Image (cartoon, rainbow over the protein chains, first blue to last red):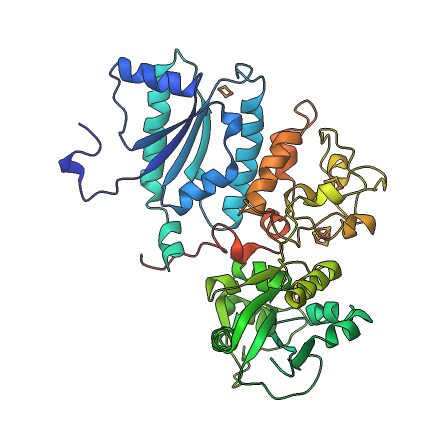
Length: 148
Length: 302
Ligand code: SF4
Ligand code: SF4
Ligand code: SF4
Ligand code: FES
């Protein structure tokens, strides 16, 4: 059953933004698609060249515009095609989570993970897990707050 | 206009008067300005009645009370050119950090819970004075602002340039490089940060970029124009000029910078987690103009 099927309407249907690196995260998503693996269709994918290119301000902007969760998937440690972009991303996301916590947004709404081009199943699992987590957290309060 | 002179009002909101001091600090240049500009209203500096209209209205301080909000809206109708002077008026400034808490909690802390206060009945003052607002806003969010001059206090040179532009009819633009560009400690080489240090605790090398030493120096994400005066005085930049053009969130940008310069061999995520008070340090002057404008508060029961 698809997560956004009519039977599930009325339930909270989170919006999740996925920043996927071109070489691994995006390739894994592509593979998951080709393998027809089932995972929540709530993920809206934005392809970036490398997880190291994701600017923390873009993530804040995504939350401000109403994303309930932001998922970043890059190459496994050691496999980044630009040497260490994923390590740098990991540092930034750790700090950004701390900042989010301080300014009142659950840091669990932001997640960084790794999947290689051959790991379609792993990718689908990450998305499923994150989807459940966000659904438990409920809607992002930021949007409402900023609209006032 | 007044005898061919530009009329000017300097209107205090919730100000510390440091911005007014910057204008007085122009010293002998004030005499030169006085040939062209008539200061008709400036309650922090001198006593006078508010005029019905002026050419230029300069606001100092933050919008911290309902009265501040009212003043800004009223004066917008009374002036031709509206100027936000200082970090408080342009970015939110130090008073903007109040957006991390609520008025209720703040008053409780000050009048009831503070260790120096004995107030067993928990009474809070109930005076007929302007009410604090729950969310400090920047002028730009309330009215059209024609010119903004950030800085806490704003650099004298910029204030002087602004007045000159008004007199000569020239253009006034803020510099939009970063503090690092004006910093004597900038080597121009790519920065590498090998440690995380705390200001006031760890020893400082006065001849090496403070950020590279491991202190939080906001130079890379802060607008130039102050000639890196804090670093010249031996302190890290705390970001009072706000972000340069094109950047809206100083904290997010600083996090990006830290990610780019940390030495991956010497610094672990756990080291970064030891940095205290990220929101207070990275949004020190800009919280009300940042992405979320303050702490995200949830309405109870949805
Ligand atoms: S910007 Fe600084 S100097 Fe000016 S009023 Fe605010 S705190 Fe005072
Ligand atoms: S980071 Fe600070 S100390 Fe280093 S060059 Fe920039 S302004 Fe100067
Ligand atoms: S060095 Fe930084 S904190 Fe100091 S005056 Fe310049 S911008 Fe403000
Ligand atoms: S290329 Fe995939 S994380 Fe850098």
